[in-house]
Image (tube, rainbow over the protein chains, first blue to last red):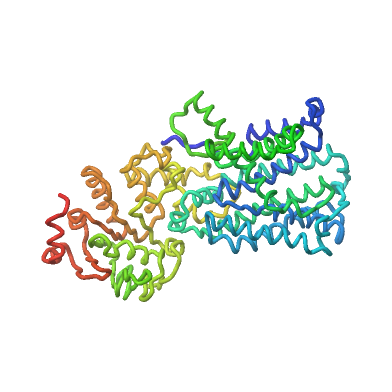
Length: 335
Length: 247
């Protein structure tokens, strides 16, 4: 009987450690000179980056216009709240569905492409959505966006929990993040996730093995867009506004940088590491210099040139050097 | 009736005619061979037969059903599998995972986003059995990129076999193999021949003439001769090529 890889498990130890660390941040963040809103923002970006990595890291599909779906989630949440009904669950669901629907349309056009053509098409669609958000003033509020959005309370039937404070909203965002982590972890180890990784490695072989490659790429895009929309809705709550800047090309680039710097190409946890690293770098470097993005950009270039596996890749290399395994089971590790 | 038939296939790329009125028939349970010089159109022929290219003219049928113009995935799902001359593997995956994703039962559950594939011991057993069949027992957890050339050739066939095909196309399976590897491959093909209809493109004429029931000779994109090894032994091109064939 050959040695076989262990099953992935529904909730793993690294997940529990991560959730515990994040849940404890309100207790110690202020003591290290940081603030609760930062933790909220990090959790939202981690959610967004994890969903994005399903596309980039697992399916090998480089979308450079993902801000469109993040922004669509934010706008849909705001518009539903202002014009339809102020209900957290309904507005969140609407935001996810709106982003998924837009993702379905965009994916229908891009999924027959790959590589540079795929990337260029996603940029084009991202720019169209960004332009519409700026110009459709009567609906989107133009360059100002939608202002004075409410942090709607959590209504669980028998009780209502307000999310006005940053700590309360952070706790809610953390629960959403945990559900996304568990769901995506399950997905990437499912037959669907395995097929996506096979398509990333060799689209031709996957097609000759009988897989409808276009459909798998389409579904992956829709799921990724839906998660971006969820994160966008949380961002709209955090910022109490939705504005076109989140859809811009450079904002779309941020999530790419997070995933690559963190090591999303080699690890499930890469986007999480990358989001923490990016937001902390922005705040800590930003406190010293306005040109923080220049330094971060240089770091990004260095990583792409010399360590494309990112921070997670460095960690894996260090662990492998300390305790060399007999034979690697694959490139993507749990840690 | 033949299991797989191609009638009047033509294919051109720009001004270059690659296939011209090619008609082929592969009988069930037999090993058919295709030979011809470099650039004769053999691999393009395979690509047209397996859906990679749509023919400009002509049609292809499998088990009586017209499959002309179907996608490679649709043709594969009907029970036609192939290997490639230039190896086409999932390089980051282990040998076992390469075979695993090609299994029909995994393909049937391809949109399952809930269950962990690693918990499915039946699929893992099947993948291990396929690997053992192509001589890769004990190499299950080695990433494909780390296998030796000969092992990768064997895995290429294993991935094609994993789909449980009714018809298996092998595109130059001996390419780059030494004498030992070629001999092992010949043994495997003899064993496969009992279970699946095979079509093999080969440069190694002695290898193919020793195994094939029927051989088609393609030159300049046309079928110039067909028959058993004995029948073709008088063909001038075959005689010339056999004189220079590898021992």
